[in-house]
Length: 181
Image (cartoon, rainbow, N blue to C red):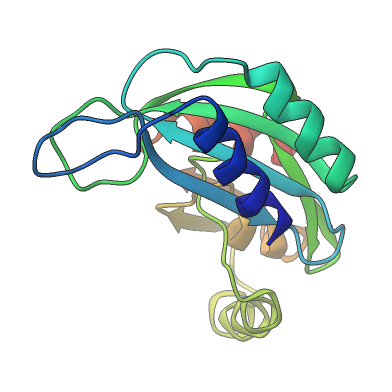
């Protein structure tokens, strides 16, 4: 994609080294791109082995010029000796730090660390099927375990008396609360 090509050229121009898991050296670990199926909004997240990048404003400008659907660009900091892709903290370089999508007729905010199904059409079918099993005339409380951004529970909220989401990732909890509002 253009996003990857532009980022690769920027890395070459400023000699930004890619991360090597064996030596634990290098700055750029991953380029994480998330696109909302219905809204077309795009998130670009650079996962780095450090605390800053050089000439980020030039990268942002080139990416926005190439793709107007990019709504946010973030840095995610992963300096741990791990093969886990994302670190626990990020910094917004451009935009609001999230994108929005529509699933099951509801609008959801999605941040880099919040879970969101990648196969939109199947997610919608899955959630509709889950609602058929979970919601009965006697349903008063629905528990959404490991709720991420809250998409499953909130897609059923109208038919349940109360939805309680359980999640451990603070960024996902924040998105779930915003989505519930």
